[in-house]
Image 1 (cartoon, rainbow, N blue to C red):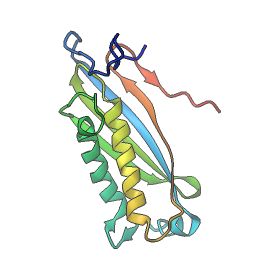
Image 2: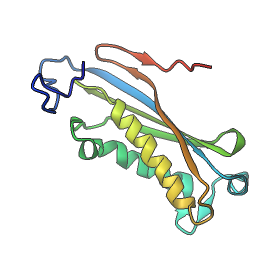
Image 3: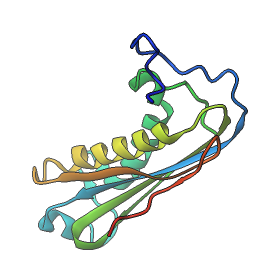
Image 4: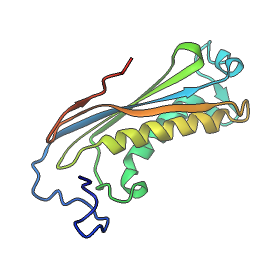
Length: 159
């Protein structure tokens, strides 16, 4: 059953008034595939473009995105995040790995905040590098885990 649709099929915000405040956490991951020539420029550490340091700027943008999730996703509750951390690193074969971890004590979860933070960081990597190559691909954004509330979730890769 979809929680954001009423019995009369009208979209609405979920009422969390009766829920218990618990410590809620979520971790999301995004991958950005860089073309080989562009990825080679990251080999010595932080890539700088005319716009500035790519990973540092993406960390700031991802944090801002996580904090503004309720302004972007219509039925997300506004949350005063207690913590938001982004870790961005070069993975294998020219892939940039972005992890966004978010936490709050609240009546609703922070999955969308973590996913938004990872997504905005990935978009920022793209934006900051697009002048060097249009072959950049944002490959995968997904939830790795969530804790707190009614149920916990751990992503189980399927092979």
